Image (tube, rainbow, N blue to C red):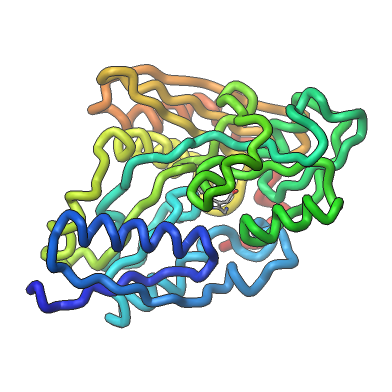
Length: 313
Ligand SMILES: NCc1[nH]cc(CCC(=O)O)c1CC(=O)O
């Protein structure tokens, strides 16, 4: 088995390559002699850059081509930002490993201001995430939110070109790319509840590849995995399949799981929040029951409204 070469399907953005190389190196370090190579690919999400993701079919755009490659045996595994992984997997594929989470927070990045609250009236903030837009607008209804897509580097370039007064990015992506010094304010969960799985890297492969699944166990981080399971269970119950204004964030405090959830109108005019605390063994049940509480508190109507403006996926 050791003379087999394991092939990682990966997108070619600097962040995707960083994450694929991270998994490659960790796999080789855990299993000396193992051969692991990258298979770089282009996905629809990389090609369609001018339209908000919510309008072109959601995050699945970033993973479909990678999944096709695994199903056709052109690759053996794919490394994803957990944030971009849809709820459902194609027959025969599944998520088998979740690595340790990097900083899960959203980051405020600006060349002129050190915090959201320092932004002047009517300042222009770049983000295409309905979740970030919602929480930003709820706190500061005067801000003008403008769409911002592309790789992390592209987004920073648009900020530097003066198109925005500030932008919001995931702290994890900036840190992985060595751009931590661009962060002016790491937003606490109370200010910007992160997206499901934000900051965590997950590994998908063919479910009948038991040799690979065994090798990948060395990279699994059980604390991160249980948090992300709770967050994804909440998202699944909300049917948050494509880009929607949903935040879901869990932390472990000893063996107690603390899960917070949020559903909001994109313009911040409405926001429904809730939380659960319980034993880690109940991660999924907590996610589902929190989702049901949110639905009953008004999330059903908010999400219905949001989906009306989006094509079915
Ligand atoms: N939607 C794109 C995306 N997917 C994952 C990350 C950052 C890294 C992570 O959350 O693990 C980003 C960039 C961003 O949101 O700023």
